[in-house]
Length: 131
Image 1 (cartoon, rainbow, N blue to C red):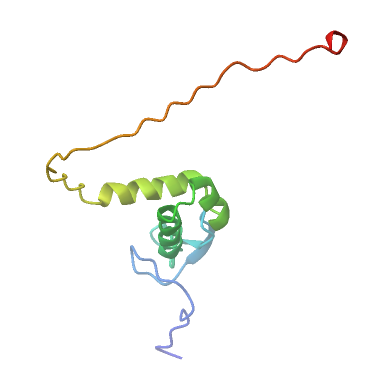
Image 2: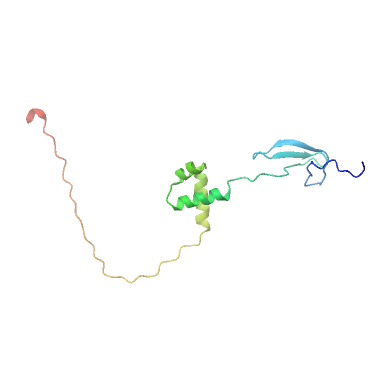
């Protein structure tokens, strides 16, 4: 059969665009299948999986941090390392605009009440034989 493409299920090398002599060459760290082109000798991943955490996890971590939860607890809750959460918080803080300077407030008379508390010495116990 002339003109029939027998490589319809094969991958195409992104470098030389060849669809023949494509061999499996292991997996990368994220678990995607790697291939090696027999024509140009280069290795490639046809559909690489993205690295890192989804954006939803990052947004949830930031929301929990704003609500007052500490970094380690956020890490345990979301199954993420606490240092990763700290990096996300620092990156978000760096992207925020600078805080506006407070306007000058006119001074008014302020009154303070002082509370003085005195704690004396601890009372000594009298031994049993001297009672």
